[in-house]
Image (cartoon, rainbow, N blue to C red; front, side, top):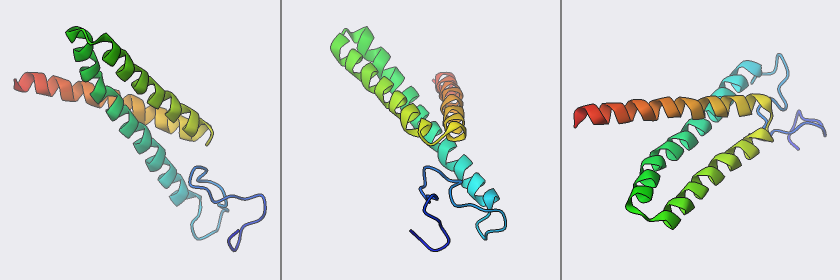
Length: 120
């Protein structure tokens, strides 16, 4: 336990508001900004990986490699579900921020595919 914390407080990075008191040097505003950045970027990165592997998954289905395609789909879904479970333990706002980042990555992936198609 570090100085300035009580037995009930935790300074875990998964719970960014723990240990913040109004008037403390770290204050709630910088911590909130870090929370927004951390969870939104976590969701965005997971979404980019999820949607980037979608093309490979479709290609495997078309080529007839059904077991490989099914395995890749299972991994994609397992990663997405594990993100929801892990971030969900941190609370409502982290889950909402990660989901927002994940959904924004879907829009970014569609935009990237559209620009790639127009370039060809």
